[in-house]
Amino acid sequence: MDTLAHLAAIVLGAVFVVAAVAKIVAGTTWVAEARDLGAPTPVATVLPGVELVLGALLVTGVAAPIPAVVAALLLLAFSVAVARQLVDGRHPPCACFGAWSQRPLGEGHLLRNAALIVVALIALL
Image (cartoon, rainbow, N blue to C red; front, top):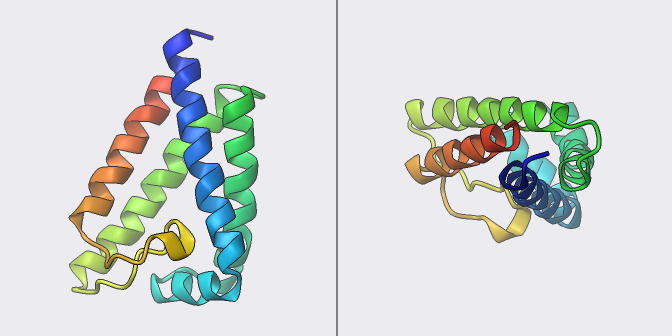
């Protein structure tokens, strides 16, 4: 794996691990906030575990490049969910990083996700 691609995978994996841990620590608060964002309860319940496993796979390079593809697709899905909220005029707290991210949704969240998608694409090199 190319050094830049490996570094991108590690950075992206770390982001997913931090997001997962923050959601796990938030517990039921995270699930309620995710529902406010439009996520069904089953999705909100399993998402922290998915993010944790995905982050670990990215950091370790196991099964590369599949985790980078999955990360890009997941970030795209997050972006669609955020965009739908914004189009509907809703600005609930982000909760993307549990209690660490309580800023109301805005265009900055879409820009952050776009940047992370670029990192995922670099990880595919």
